[in-house]
Image (cartoon, rainbow, N blue to C red; front, side, top):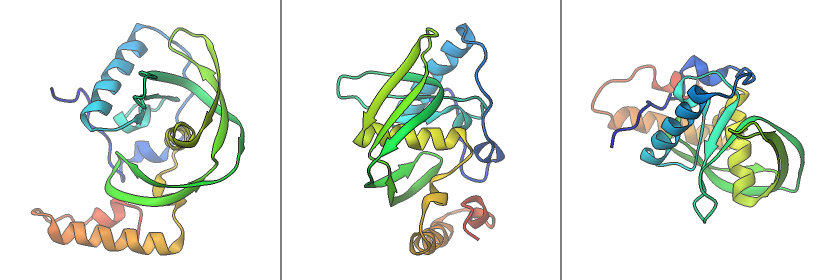
Length: 180
């Protein structure tokens, strides 16, 4: 099955903008979430923020498997965080690049679900990582902005390698990756 949406790739302006609060939770939003799940599963990924499909609204979908099932978090806010955890992180909007990134190990996040119910969630380890990564998308922050200088140099090399291996010339690929 084809994905209902294309995932926006680094360089797309929607990925650099802070998403607007969701004010209406309705059938259109529910259908969009269903399509986002299908797009995420097809990618494959474990989380997908609305800006990644070109929608400038503050919500994301995620599914870690592990019996938890698909979840939607609308207008999320990290209330508290603690600890540090380094993890090899990738992003559907930055295909092929993965880096060790340090983020808080535990977060307390609040928001709303698709039924309009308040959500208050204490997340740790991988779930905390997914929430923080997707919330970054809602704030217009990409994973490459979390890299240290050595990682940025490695990312530049990876982009150059992608350019050389690409069957089509992509003169703006370095700019797309924000690595000039």
